[in-house]
Image (cartoon, rainbow, N blue to C red; front, side, top):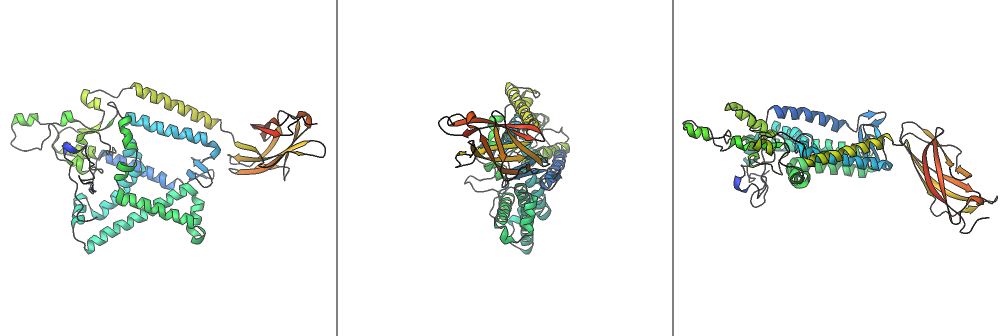
Length: 478
């Protein structure tokens, strides 16, 4: 950071909606130095963040029945959630699960605002609870960081700045490797790390790419990832209404604001609101906004302003909660949270989606079979007068045990033979492929194409029914 970087000051009230708090009127970056915060909400967020960080960093390495807790193996098209393996054939389950996730965020936002951003979003958790704390430990609080940024280069500044960037890069490397483990699996990650680098050029390239991306985000881009990249903040205008619970300033209680001074007349003092214009809510904000200007796109609901304001209210012996979780109607009219028609509709939709997802999961078959005619293969007539077609069969075993599989024609008489080996078994959590030859008597054939129904049997029970067609002569076969 150069000494020319402008130190953040509160955005003037009259133009806060015309420009970003982190940019000046010429569009140049204004570096934000949020002050350290402490308080009830910060302590709760710290505990939540430790839990989330533990899940995030351990997800690919904790095993449940031989499978990781969480994994999105794009290369093998294998997805694991809580130890349950999902394949591309389970795409409908994943699609409905994503709909439930996004609908849940919409409903949650309509009721509780951006609780996700402030408490659960990985960007906020890592930035405010990991990288920011490291920055405080190395460079000190906000005023010390400003002084260091403005000071000429010295050995102390080089050591502090260089040490911070080195720690940031090491952490980014750890986060990048964790993300890679989510994508390719822990075994493959260990091979990339321990094996000859020449054998894993692609894996190493992605390892460095992820490291560079995370380093740039947390060392340089910071709060601008929420402001410029994340679309969620822009959805607020469509998702929030006057009944949504947000981090809000109680202007009815706080205005007119003014500093506390001795010697005020009793009438003037009585006319003042509770806000003492200390600007501590601005000083601790990681996005540099003034929450007293109302709900803004940059606000991630981190509650730092609540803790800072409550600390000031305690010092001036006024009630806490001048800035708090509240709705606009709650502040203006004293109304409690109520169910609006929009909220009812959202809730019905998400309940229907949850019901559909539950149905799909509980009716999910252990086997998923695909039966296709072998490409380019024509029908053949055997020496005994029968006709044959060759098919390719792919079977996915979603269970943790090996399953022997057999096939049977269900709607016509005929032969169905697995090529190569008399028995066909699918290993646990694997995809197996084989070829099947179907032979039919000419008497059951229809001209051109004959519809077939094939039963898939496992352990003597039919688990799937497939439909396909049998290609034969265009005229009635004899």
